[in-house]
Figure 1: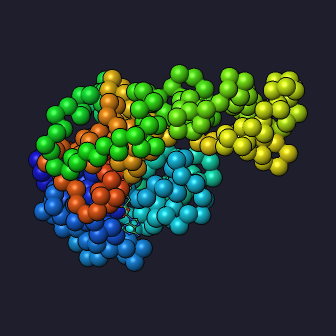
Figure 2: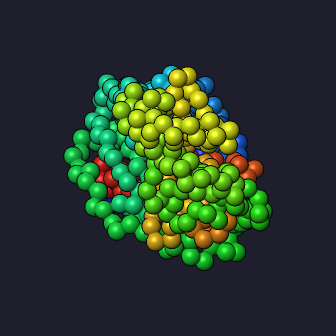
Figure 3: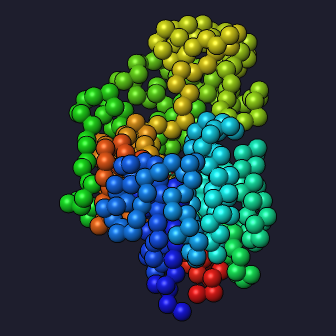
Amino acid sequence: MKHASLSFASLFSGCGGFDLGFIREGFSSRAAYDCDSEAVDSFKANFSSPIYDVDLTEGVPRENELRDIDVLIAGPPCQGFSTAGKRQIDDKRNHLLTLTGHLASRISPKVLIVENVAGALSGAHARYWHELDATMRQAGYRTNTIRCQATDVGMAQLRRRILFFAWKTKRDIDFTIQALPPKDLRSVLDGVQHQANHHPKKLIPQSREWQIARRIKAGQKLSNVRGGENAVATWDIPEVFGAISDHERTILEVLRRLRRQNRLRDHGDADPVSLCRLESALGKPFVRLVDDLVAKGYLRRVGPGIDLVGTFNGKFRRLAWDKPSCTVDTRFGSPRYFLHPSQPRGFTVREAARIQGFDDGYTFHGSELGQYRQVGNAVPPPLGALAARLAKRLLGA
Ligand SMILES: C[S@@+](CC[C@H](N)C(=O)[O-])C[C@H]1O[C@@H](n2cnc3c(N)ncnc32)[C@H](O)[C@@H]1O
């Protein structure tokens, strides 16, 4: 069977990462839909097939033309499910997953594939995924959800995702992924100079951010909540955050350890520590220094307890050349979150796109923020291609 004859359409298409995976596997695009006009511009610049700038909660324009498509793919927003966000159960974006099921059962493709973050399957949030599953089963489809890690498809990025499959072709296939060896960052960033969307912006020498960045080595991040060799605490950078004595450092490090022990909550970060507990761990003479550390901006009083100022885990995360990248997200251009392995800057749009598995010929349009948003939100094309290969097997192609 000729693969070129296989057709697909996409919902929540963004700049077209998921679509590109299907095109690479020989499918031809019928239509795409998204409400972000900048992403739509990027899509148009890279594909000749139609994309509609629409709000899908108001329906799918010319839905009838999709009636006989082989595959419908959808990448609804993941922010409401992502553990990197607030994970509000009623985030209105979560309902777009349910909407996907209703739209798909009306369009009735032979195969539906939906991508999202692994967080969409955990805890109470899983109800949206289960609803999608139930809708497709009621419509006569068989379903399966698989978990994937981007490094397993040979990418230089750790990105855990889930893929939902619904099909009415009555085929049984083995969904097991044969993991490829992961790539490292060096291999995908090699030769990135002179490509489109590559505009490195170095931090201003001697600026506060530049001074922080130069203290963070590859594989390290600025973090006050965990110790260990991969964490650099604010008090390790006295030229920016203020000098402290050895005794004061001991207090901060003991507090860092205590706030993670005997936690009051069973999730999330850690809790403030009572002065009594600090005193029993350190002895009275040390505890007298707490006020000095409050005055220096390293500690703060929280009710009857005491806590660190800056309880973030992982800003200024410097990636390492010899490892895969962490998950590319919409903040990849900001050095406050992610640092280039060897330069005082964040990543360019092109670098982020390469880590996401886009070819250099694929261009991104719109504002700079919009471009990072498109790349960070995209389904990596190699993951899209994996989904396309599985779809072909479900179609018997
Ligand atoms: C995870 S991104 C999609 C990524 C895309 N599939 C790709 O691979 O590049 C989610 C997309 O949903 C779009 N979106 C959110 N709400 C929408 C709505 N109500 N109607 C249409 N698109 C919407 C966003 O603009 C965003 O591009």
